[in-house]
Length: 344
Image (cartoon, rainbow, N blue to C red; front, side):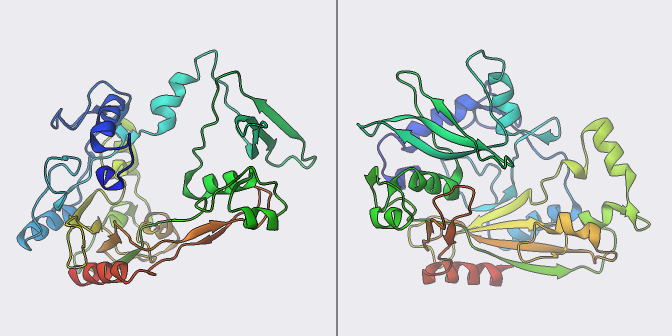
């Protein structure tokens, strides 16, 4: 993927050393593709549902192939396998506890929570000099300013939605659109907010006659929360509470693929889906008295061709922007999902 971007400095050869330096692989996989000395921990999920194990067997028998390491760049990504996860001792390993907690000990690191950045500030040479922000929930709307030291930088890491929103609210974006919202134009760039890409998905779900096999059933006992998985996690940091819910899956190259790469990701859920995205099952089932045992396939167009955009609804970053996902505007994505549904 990185090579396909054809962006200088972002090739696979450029990025791999950075990934390896930040990773601490606990699975014993190839050091050619994984690091051992970093802070971001990758491990196997300490639980495997019987339905998930069966999924691997059926997927291999169906000719999808197997893949023991989806991050092995020396081979195609296709095949069924287990997803390695960001966990430390059975608990989530996030960017916060992997990196930020250590950085907080530095004298030059100060964290502001409960804030909303309103704009990036620029000088006459269009160089960023700091940001303006206010406090979430502060009815006085008092604005504060954080100024850069000489040579400092403003790093925009607000995601695919809020990053273009912040840039446009700061005066960087399509000039006409900015003027329509009364925002002084710092730099006219029509690409800001464009080329939004997401991964559309469709779920196929089945009921199984075998009782008590799904994750949702194992978390219940006599209609109440089953205390044993909770105790197992608290005491041993193992069991089904270490699962991300979709820790088994596959990558498949369907007939819709145009670049020789797998265009379909299958995420297997050892539970009968309660919603269109499948994953909300694990938060919704608590409100459902009788949920049937089953399993689900979430088919994801992992190399979507459709593109949407982000536009401002207001010059105020507190106001959510207008999002046009552009889902399925490219017929190739629809074909990929259709093949995924048929496969499920």
